[in-house]
Picture 1: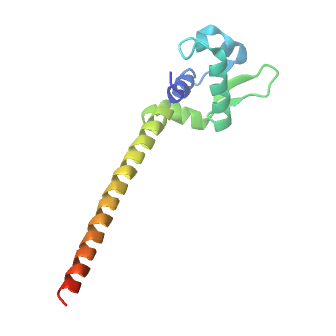
Picture 2: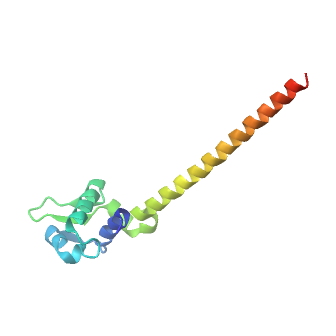
Picture 3: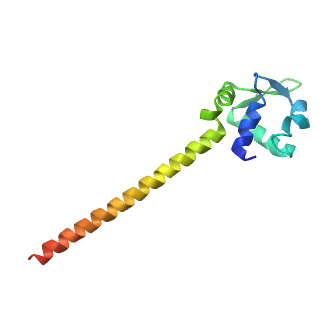
Length: 125
């Protein structure tokens, strides 16, 4: 699973606005379908906590739950999810690349036209 898919997959584990204890997260049932290595999942969990998608309680038995931002992303993965953001970023890069290609050829055409015009004016003297 790619990073963006893993982020979306972790957020989907909280469907129903669940709060999960660290013990439940350490259980293989939680991370098995995300990644076989728990530490990869934990690193992504910590990233999501840092991003403000998840929050960790400060109680004696800490648990992880969604924030409003995380809930929004989880329920709108096709628009706001990490995979969607990657797709949007790739589309934007492709648009920028095609725009730069068009601008390059327009500049070359303008330069050749000007050079042709200058040479024509010089030869008519």
